[in-house]
Amino acid sequence: MEIDNSELDKPLRAVVINPNELPDIEQLRWQCRRGLLELDYLFEHFLEHSYPTLVADLKIAFVMLLSYPDPLLQQWMTGSLKPDDESIGQVVKLLQSTRL
Image (cartoon, rainbow, N blue to C red; front, side):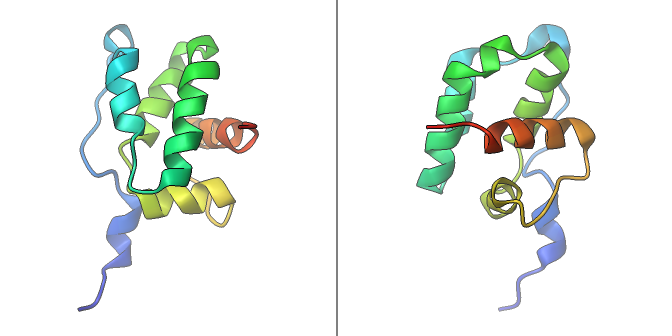
C-alpha cells in the first residue's frame, strides 16, 4: 500500500478559532496527548509553562498546530521541515526552545 505524502501537510480536522472562544486548558491538555510520547511531553510542558503567557495570536497558532498529524509535527520539531504558516512557525520556534 502506497502512502500519499501530500496529505501529511494538512490538518487532521478543519480548525476555525475565534480568539474569544479558545479551548480551555483541560481541552488543550487532551489535544496535547499524541501518538508520539516525545510530542506528549513537549506539548504538555509547553501548555503548562509557556502557553498562558502567549499573546492571543500565538495561542490560536498553538491550537491550530495541534490539528496537524504527528509525523509532520515531529518533522517541524526536529527542524527537518518548516511550517508554511508564519504564526505556526513562531510557535514551533518556541517549542523548539523549550527545555524539559
